[in-house]
Length: 249
Image (cartoon, rainbow, N blue to C red):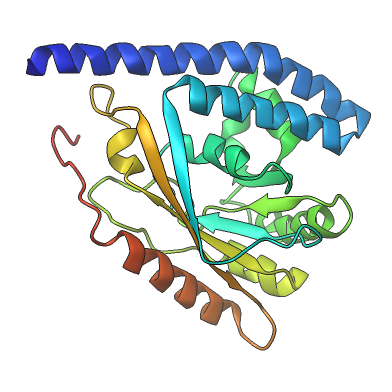
């Protein structure tokens, strides 16, 4: 029985990567071409289509528990705990009316096809280059104020090892909030460490529990205040999530 379950999981993971590749080579190419037209609304329509097809096509759904509502006339910085590849497509699914752009690692632009699309629709940062890191804040401000888009930053800076509940936060999201005078929306993604881990023979589709727990405003506080509050809010929500440590490598 365990063997059959493992085989089913591997086949499902293979399907996920095939679906992602097909979406990137079809919808992704449209996104790449549309990005030259400076039509952010239409570009985002196809970006969200890409995310929704991968998310729902891989057998995922979600439930959103929200303690706060988003203002349709406000642009935000969205943050969440970073748990798996599904986080990225889930952000597109969650925001039909608040177009998003990601701040991401420059290293990802080296991947064929995906890298060229990624470069067009993201703010890239070379974390080994101080000049690149400083330029991000101006780019974030431009997206929020001129391009009428919201910015997604995963403050852990990457997906931590599965043994780690929540990695220490980096400063970028919180400096950006103060610099741009933009509020931060705090999300929590539950159980994706189990549902889609970076272990090929583990995982399963199903309903992802999402919480939108608070909006943090930068007026009268420091980036350190924002970072500490955001970390505490997320950690308290996920500390009791049970992580399956089987086959951790």
